[in-house]
Length: 77
Image (cartoon, one colour):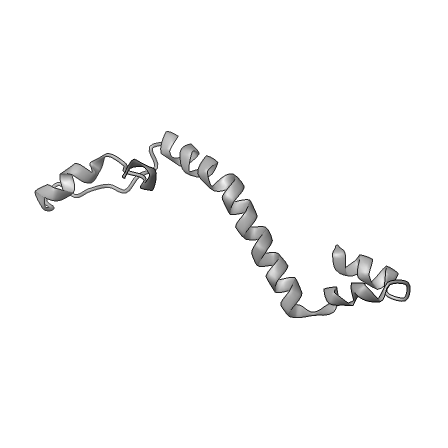
């Protein structure tokens, strides 16, 4: 969308030339995805935790893995 606005106003504002650079657009895409992850990541984790979306632990595995049947998150440490 920004690129189309850039094409529309290219002759009027020379500073909009930055949107034509692939590196700028890649950095902005990375920044946008990082912000979306920070805002919605915890909600998605809580939603999946509520669905009991967990990894199963084998019954024939080591006894130390039995403790890990309950889901531990990083904030629990």
